[in-house]
Image (cartoon, rainbow, N blue to C red; front, side, top):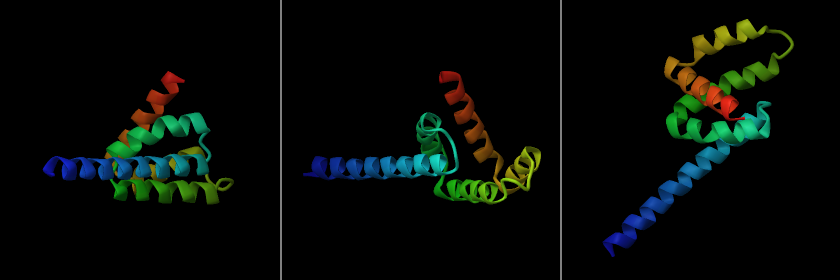
Length: 103
């Protein structure tokens, strides 16, 4: 019985992780990333970032979309550095570079 409860708990955790990864993948494609890149980056971002970090990243991504014609890439990168913690930036950069090199 104890083993059954443990397996059920692990299954639920796995489902939560898969759901988080699916939400990240959808957010990345909604932000304009090509589907293969979004699929590649979703797993490490979902695994390595907290929900709070993902929310902060999402806020910056939404702002970027709404002001697409009014800010430069440098301004966007400055905003990213200012509004998102360095750990999040590092995870995003590692995931992006890793996926780019694999592609």
